[in-house]
Image 1: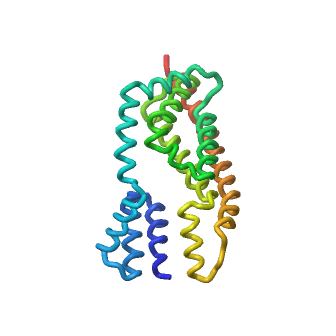
Image 2: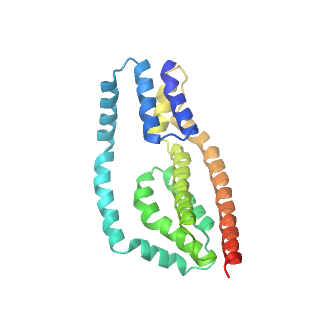
Image 3: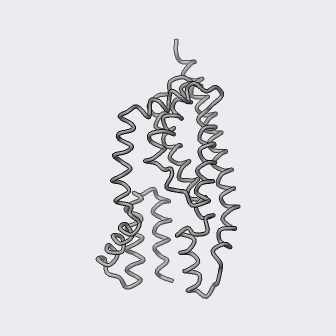
Length: 228
């Protein structure tokens, strides 16, 4: 059971807002140490996981593609498209994106969107344009808050939606771990119980987005009151 101290390291590290990369590495080293692995073996496990899942190769393909699209004016065009629509707010836009992202993650299609593929070049510019069309041009701090909320929306949708997919690696990992503890479960059982969690996460974050809309409106009103 001492191997599970790595989970405690992750919880504490995220709670005190440490660098996520350092937290994950510290958790891996902690679990590896109690499992009898040397630091080199833990690093080798990291390398094997990256190589097996092609994360490094994917980055080499995605980043140049996003750069070319942005150079061609993708961000500006996305902003112009959303700026022409009436009644669209930051919250409504991000709630729609969260619904799309959670639904696709639930059927195993997480790679079709993400921070690099959609949030930075498309969703965040569209959210900023929606705020500008509704409440006027936002200041730098507000723009950063909108971008952060767009990224958080993607995180929430994927994190709570992907476990609904029965063949997800995290689901199979939990099934394997429980099997070693002589607790026999089918993957479909975990996937079914992930549905209410995903629905609750959607409702909670959608509420946050509605409140975020209202905060942006109050800030716009305050800016208008202070201007001569």
